[in-house]
Image (cartoon, rainbow, N blue to C red; front, side, top):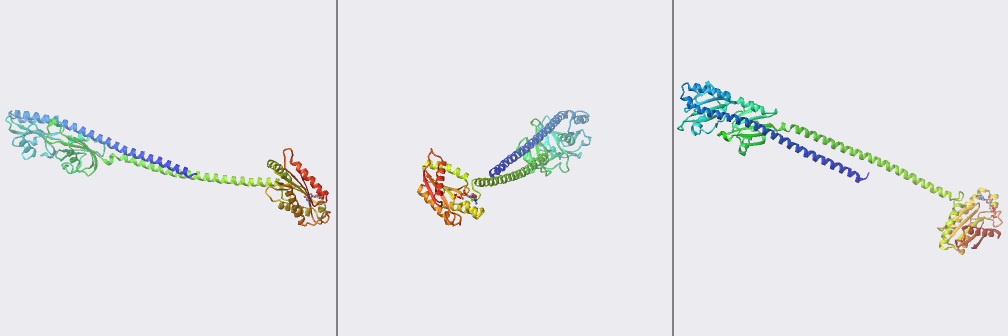
Length: 514
Ligand SMILES: Nc1nc2c(ncn2[C@@H]2O[C@H](COP(=O)(O)OP(=O)(O)OP(=O)(O)O)[C@@H](O)[C@H]2O)c(=O)[nH]1
């Protein structure tokens, strides 16, 4: 497998995984933002619901306090006026949700009428709300007191309005205490999750209620540096959604805070409501999904890397096997080629002497004929015959005859070792030599040299009439080939010359030029 392809596969996998990773990261961040946004919207809505509910209650209370204030002088001038007042106050209290007590305080600070008989004649002169109202003497203001423990033992916020005489003298207060339990019910209704709580604080920072209730929360001063309350108040926004650590509980929460102070109620202090959830719980599901996505991605990463490594290993193995098979085939082909080559040369070789055979000679003479014809060069042909070889065989035996044939063939070959020369066994004890580009004189010299070389072998031949050792006769023909002629004419001429050499006593060269 090529390095390029392996690299490309890894790059493709890597790019795909990076793209998938980026997508998962992006969608995870996007989901977190969505969860956060959705939760903030829900908390905001819940805070608004509480705001509407409390504002309606405060409006109703203000309306009743105004009504009581207007009737106060009438009741004062009536016989049994205060009894009538008590009855009316009881009736109003029953009609109002969220009010525990309705009372009238005279200019000296004594409660002179109330829906709760236990409060009548109770002195409130020392209370901050009384002192404030008697000092300010502003009948339009709805005073909202910080929460405190009332004489009834209840933790209350007091709403009060100043009563002035026609002459503008301070004649008392009409007061209403808020019923914590009634508020709790409406706050509880907006809590939609187990980890959720909502709270109401006075505008100065004292906590009035937390729902669900927790020990130590009521009365805690929230106006601390960096607290949700302080951040909200300092922002001067009616509504905020904030995240962070809650001062009063130490929890990490997301909170919607809202200031309740409708302009038409002319409240001297606002109420601040807070609705919040545990931040960890908000993102619990998102965290689970993120963990799942990361786990799945890690598994995918592992599986794809391992799979690609395995795939590439299998591919490499396949390619190695294919290469080995190809190499084996190539080796076999080469062996076959060598075999064919040796078969081809065997087919063109004489089995006994190892030189070219008649068939090879026939092929070569045709080619050399045409070549010399093209080049107009002389082509020399020698026909060589061992003298009285029959007698040699008869006397020395056929095996010695074979040995002599081999030795003579080898000697002739050594004499004609030029590139284009060819020595072939023509048949029996006859040899032919083809010598291209060789004129008659040179060819004669060559033939004579061959004859002498054979004689020099000094192979004994007692029964030869020509010599006491083995000799040869050579018929030499030389011709510049033409298209009118054929190789056979050269062969025939050489044969004639050989015949002549034999006739003339053997052991000689006879030649002719065509
Ligand atoms: N040992 C051996 N002898 C061979 C072979 N081929 C041919 N001969 C012999 O060569 C001899 C040729 O004899 P002839 O054609 O009568 O000619 P010669 O005896 O050489 O007489 P001249 O050619 O007239 O000198 C025969 O006896 C063949 O048997 C061979 O392969 N081995």
